[in-house]
Length: 148
Length: 197
Ligand SMILES: [Zn+2]
Image 1 (cartoon, chains in turn red, blue):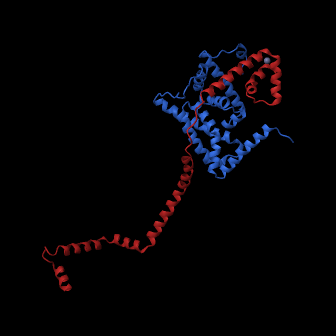
Image 2: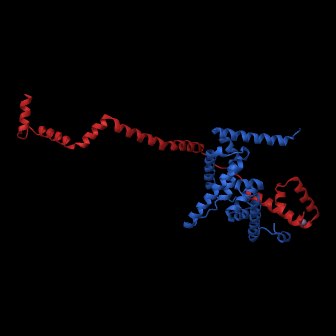
Image 3: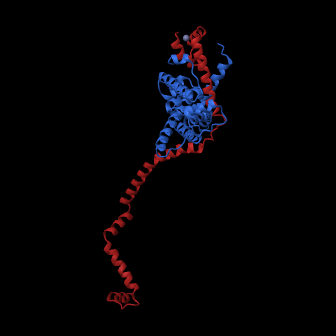
């Protein structure tokens, strides 16, 4: 193994990432090459300082507890949400069928189609209600005679 | 065949983890909670360094719990739960940083909020240097030197070839050393300069 290769592997060697065979080759080279040993020891210093520094800044930082209610409810509400469009469609269809078939809807349609009938009914009522103060019309007289 | 104690212990632990994953995939909320509690601290540490902010890190953690629970059935290999969930976290951190870039264009806000406690100058310098790294470099440094993942595992987390992880690690270390050298905290040897790592 040459110097260049060894220096490429120093990081993996230090972090225990190498297989036995490669590890032994690196160790053999380091024993016999003082230049690579210097590189190795400096890399070892740097990486251990780096690890220590990263960890030092993290000690005593514990996360707040996870809000599990939020986690579990999100999935259930999503499941319901997926059903909302189909519910809406069924509801619209049912209302449509009901309107088309029911006799009440037929009556409603009749009323909407003949607004004059409704209008005259209202005028009769109001004429009757106004009777004591106003002179009775012919129609009103006929009505009273008929009643007695 | 004889196995030493250490090996048996490791195997048993991973078996527990696999069983929890399988139970969670079958719909057990309790199993999912226990599973997530096992990796929560590691995820939080990672997010704190990448995001430089504890409240953002907590938001990321909460979001990762939600996404992981929703998608747990997509995890094929139960043993890869931790790397799988770490990938979700890294993606979330990336999204938060992108969003923050948009915001900080409008209002120049300082994001360095991780408490720098009574640490050595080197340690403080390292954190500042890490914070100056761009996201891909910061991510590999944190995964490798804070969480101790192997290059292979990092490749799985980041969904990239091991070669890419190697070159990113080398580049990130080089940048860190250069930064610390400017800060007067690191003095490289001549031997190292002579060879490109
Ligand atoms: Zn050498």
